Image 1 (cartoon, one colour):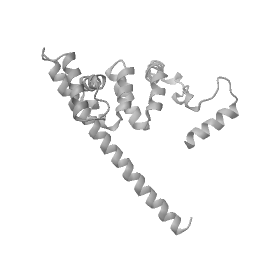
Image 2: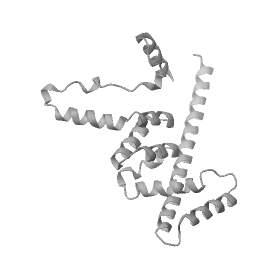
Image 3: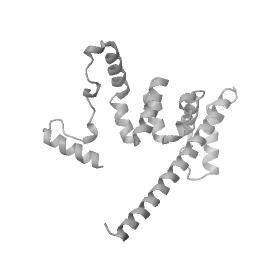
Image 4: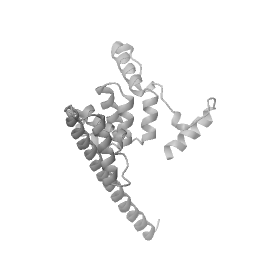
Length: 196
C-alpha cells in the first residue's frame, strides 16, 4: 500500500469513528428521552384522572406539535411507559440502557420473562454488538434458557466428570443453510458469515 492509499484509509477511519460516535450520542439522547417520557407517563398514570383518554390526547397533541415525528403514537407512548416501569429502580442495568438501540430494547422487553433474563440479553447485545436481527435470532432460539440449563447442568456435575463447556451446541441459523447440507457447505457459509 502506497502513502496516498494509507492516508485515504486513515481519513476513512476518522470519518467512520466520528459517524459511530455521533450515532451513539444520538441513540443515548433518544433512549434518555424515551425514559423521561415513560417516567412522566408512569407518574401521571398513578392519578385517576389520567387514563387511556389522556394517552390518546397526548399522542394527537404531539403529532400536531411535531408533524412527521415517529414513535409517539398511542402504542409508542405506552412502550415508553413500559420501558420506564420495567427498569425503574434497577441499578444493575440503568447505566447500560443507553448502549442499546430502541429496537433492541423493544425486542428484549417483549420476549423476556424476568429481570435476570432482560439483564442477560442487554449485556449480551452490548458485548456482542448485536443488530436487532441478530438479537432477535438469539431471543427466538431461547439462548438464555439454554445457557441457564447448561450452566446448572455443569454446576451439578462433580468436578472430575465435567465435560468441556466449550463443546456445547451452537445455534447457527444466521448462516441461512438449508435443512440438509454438507460439511463443506457449512464451512463455506461459516467463513462467509465471519467475513460479514
